[in-house]
Amino acid sequence: MTTDHLQENHVTTGATVWLTGLPSAGKTTIAYELADRLRAAGRRTEVLDGDEIREFLSAGLGFSRADRHTNVRRIGFVAELLARNGVTALVPVIAPYADSREAVRERHAEHGTPYLEIHVATPVEVCSVRDVKGLYARQAAGELTGLTGVDDPYEEPETPDLRIESQHQSVRESADSVHALLSERGLA
Ligand SMILES: Nc1ncnc2c1ncn2[C@@H]1O[C@H](COP(=O)(O)OS(=O)(=O)O)[C@@H](OP(=O)(O)O)[C@H]1O
Ligand SMILES: Nc1ncnc2c1ncn2[C@@H]1O[C@H](COP(=O)(O)OP(=O)(O)O)[C@@H](O)[C@H]1O
Image (tube, rainbow, N blue to C red; front, side, top):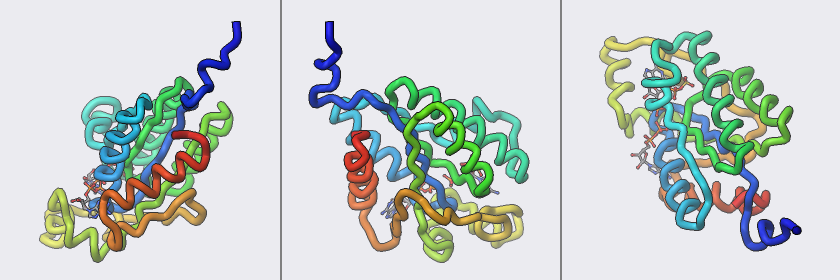
């Protein structure tokens, strides 16, 4: 018996798509828009939402460098497991430190699992106006410290697979560009 029928018009390879960027950059919005499309096309897809992960898998972790590193590595571990088993894992998580992102990339490489890094590169000036969760306002009011991109580091990816300037695009266009990249790589 051959497995040719599995290959015909049907992508069976999973992948991790990590959307990194500042709070309010557009990571979550793009991830859910893309998830809808991939599911409509019959792909198995999961969004590993940062807030949900922090409620369950990473309960108790804060926003220190060490805690963020632990959080990102845990999420990377789960994403790789999903991706290795045919799921497209979409990860809208800040991941502010280059070494944490590199650890996740290496883990995927060790297992031969496809990994794409998307930098949602919306400038802090735009993010702070969007301020979806009111974090920038709280930081400005002195009610919060250690906000990524304001008074906590964000190490920009130097060579992402794709950079999105969401301030110049609609949500649809941003999701299109990630979808196109997945298709180009034979992953959608
Ligand atoms: N101090 C500080 N800095 C940054 N972000 C903060 C902070 N406090 C709370 N939040 C909210 O938590 C979300 C970031 O957590 P993540 O698990 O996605 O990111 S990471 O651990 O920093 O990689 C992040 O979600 P997004 O806004 O979707 O990026 C914030 O809503
Ligand atoms: N091209 C775009 N891509 C993604 N979000 C956009 C875009 N243009 C405007 N937005 C808006 O920016 C906000 C981004 O919020 P969110 O996705 O929660 O950000 P993050 O997950 O990065 O914190 C949403 O209100 C969304 O509608």
